[in-house]
Image 1 (tube, rainbow, N blue to C red):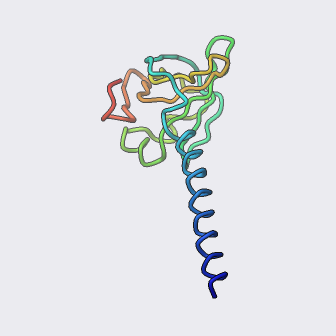
Image 2 (cartoon, one colour; image 1 turned 135 degrees about the vertical axis):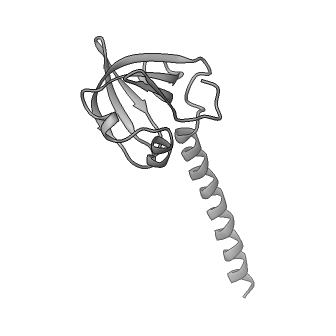
Length: 128
């Protein structure tokens, strides 16, 4: 009986450690840790859109570069006044937010999107 109890404690500890690693990896991707603290802006044309959970992504052509712009979850986009049609292929957008801290990556996280002169704030609690 003592061996069984020790096995349960050991397995529970292992599950906790694994859970902590999974949570940390998830936060590293979905948080802001991968992005710079410096405000960044780009204007371009949407060439591809994948909207949905855990967040949407837009491919945006900017001059001779292709950027991936992380936008909000469907509820966040809707709250900001953005519809899927507004984030469709061919639309010209200006995005304010933060780019990847790796200068080799053309990836940014949007805080605010301007379409047809109208500003849509995805994170109203953040200064942008």
